[in-house]
Length: 158
Image (cartoon, rainbow, N blue to C red; front, side, top):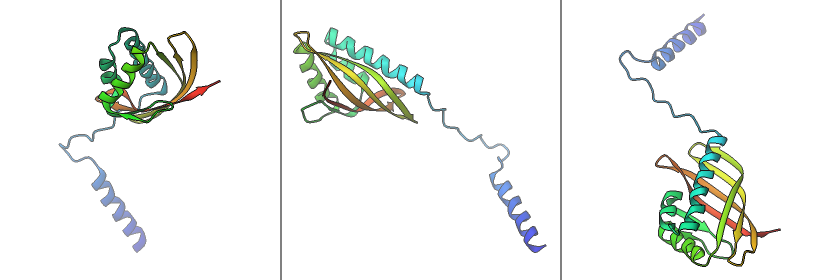
């Protein structure tokens, strides 16, 4: 009987401690996680802006809109570049050379305010030759917008 009384008393104390207090503000709930389809659509929109920048030459604006401030770009056969200024210089060099890049997400997985993307992209050289590249991007939600945080581009694939 003593054990039942102790269990009952413990349950009452726990219920009292976890019950909302009168006049207390309701606990804030985390916003629901975006679906893979929603994040994929956001990623594709970033890539549209990316492609536009290759056409218009507005690379600095595209980098600001597409990459986190401390992002790293890992181009193939080159060391990583970090931050908006260095990424802008790297991409501006490609634009000036007449290179175009397109990307298409093949697989996206969402982890709260981070997402993992794998895809196959095309690198079009000034002479029209097309090379396919595999890439992996770690996306982060930054100021309410999905931005590239780590952008890894592999060498060519068949």
